[in-house]
Structures are given as structure tokens and as C-alpha cells.
Image 1 (spheres, rainbow, N blue to C red):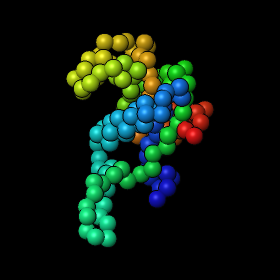
Image 2 (spheres, rainbow, N blue to C red):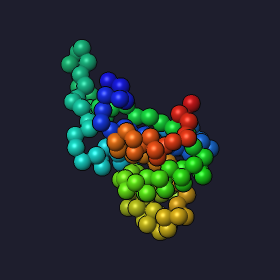
Image 3 (cartoon, rainbow, N blue to C red):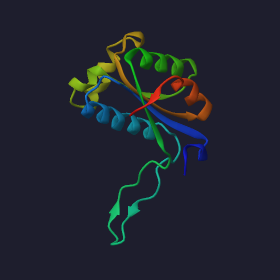
Image 4 (cartoon, rainbow, N blue to C red):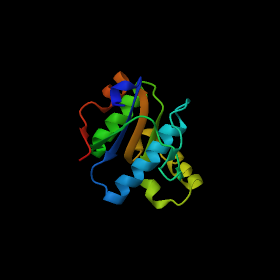
Length: 140
């Protein structure tokens, strides 16, 4: 199934100046937030190979990954807020924390306009996502 086979679109935008391991880490965390906040089943059934070994299920729809500067991520953040969308964020401060309670505290300590965003992930109707990520390029 392709992106257009769903009523919603999943998009992740990651800051383009991160190290490769940081980009992957940010994507993984943001997608976990998208899945957790979906409010409906978005994960399929378990996978099973020909020998009967079972594997964990995954998200049923494609994830579009974009690269963006810090300034463009701030624009993505603002657009998502303006549309009253629920979305996940990852800030640079989270690279220095080691556990979920510390992550929450690090975000809570910074005003919205001052967040040092390194990633944003969302799942919303197609038009809303298109408007939020307008002008971004797909991650290479």
C-alpha cells in the first residue's frame, strides 16, 4: 500500500546537521510517539517467516522522512501548532538525558518558542501534513 491509500499521512522531519546515529535515534523516538498518539490501531499483525518464527508488528502505513534546517523545523512546529495538530518533538537537550522522566523534564524546562528542535513527527490528514511539511525535501 502506498501513502495515498490511507486517510492520514505520517511524516517525520529531522534536522539536517545531526550525526547519522542521531538522525536514526530521533526518527525512532518520533515514530514511537506517532504510534502512541494515534488513538486508533495503526500497527498491523505480527510478522512470521516461512519457519514459523514470529516477529513484532510494525506501523501499517509508510513514513515519509524529511530533512530540514533548524529554522525550517521551527516553521514546521509553528504550522503544526497553528493547525491544532498533535505531534511528537525531539529536542537537542534529549541527547544528554538517559531516561523518560529526564526527557520530559528537559522539554518542560523550555518555553515553546525556545525549544531547540531536532525533529518533529506527526500523523494527520493528508492536506494538514502537506501544509505542515511544505517546502521540505525528502531525507537523502
